[in-house]
Length: 346
Ligand SMILES: [Zn+2]
Ligand SMILES: [Zn+2]
Image (cartoon, rainbow, N blue to C red; front, side, top):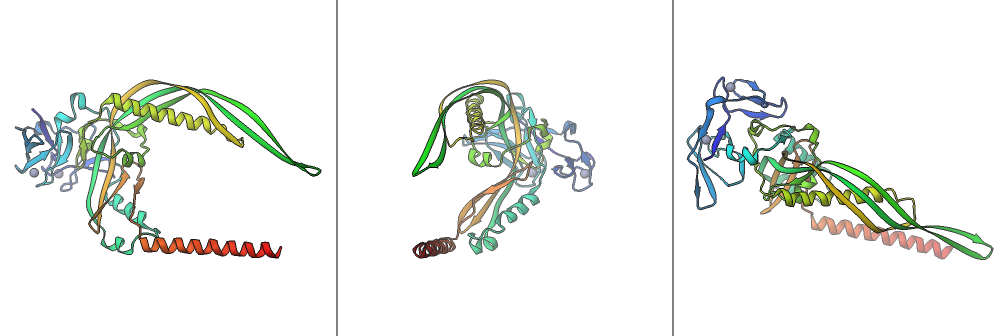
């Protein structure tokens, strides 16, 4: 049996939503503000007779308007499609599914729209019509479930490197090559390495808006969900740990490689990297998803709800693209011709 939680203002029964500016639950009717870390609406939990429909959706009835809410198995927070009241599915945020921490949204929907506009700015290859015709299909603030892992890498790495010197002796060009065997060893500690725990979210998209600052995370309370969407984790912690350890190994390798740059060539010759896992936690991180429709195609954009980092691929105007490439080709040809001209004179 699962419960639905709704968010009602204790003063006026208005609908409470999380306000990014004040970081409080806010009532738009009476301006009442409540601290999400401690707010407790007491009796307002509703036990619903949820049931499976077509084996696909769970069906709830909305406490506020009686409307039917369909949610899938993973849904942790949503809103009623009829009255807009935010809801939390208690069964998906308690017990094994209770997150330890949450980074509350710092930026709202308006900021996401603003960043989208900035993202278009100065993109000369963007089709002109995109700016006027593209429409927001959906803008969604979603809490993405993550597993975060601490880990320490004990690493040894070997490289073959060379350094070359050139000089002239009489009529001869002399090249001297020095060969080095490099050895690096050390211990690198990693804190809160994140792995996307939702099967519904595209990991590439999620990773491209990282990093999130774990230090900003609060103790989890489902009040922070008010007005947003959330899914519970659907990816196994063990599989995720393996991904985190891969990230730790890759980062260690590039950190070590960055200490070998004062050679002319350097190639890795071997490594021994052991990762020791520390603490692991289940957390919720905020992300804005923007679906934009243009000429029957969907374009997905995302903004980090904590830092405002914005990413997404824009369509390219093929004609402009070819025109610019042709322009570059002409310039290169011209430059080569000029070089040739001077070479012939010289
Ligand atoms: Zn109120
Ligand atoms: Zn409703």
